[in-house]
Length: 138
Image (cartoon, rainbow, N blue to C red; front, top):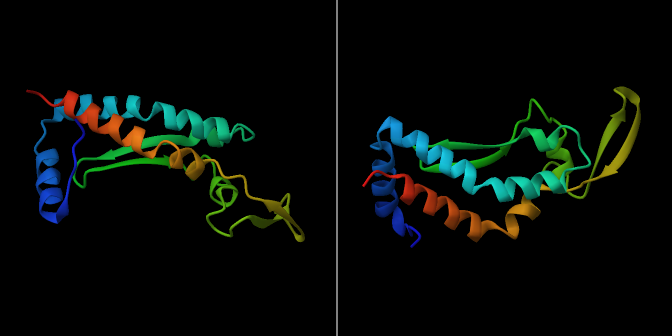
């Protein structure tokens, strides 16, 4: 049964409970979360298969202090991911050709991140919640 947090009071209690999880249990929870997000990260990688850097830059970050699970693209490893997702400029973006600021071209965005999330949001959230519940010591 998934955890449903309703209201700020319940969320604050949930965050406090996550903060109090023993260090060795946090490792198990993180491992379970990474496994639970594997499908969505795989879909993102497939959608970005035209890139040699983006698929390898997709990762998961967990923060117990704020009860967050983030699927992210490492900007240092794939700086072109943001414009291709269309986050900066919408459906297309402009860039200089091989760094030559006298020659610019327009290129269409090729979203890979949010389309993968849109179709899988509930399933992944439930898998992460299950992973958290199953990883806590009883």
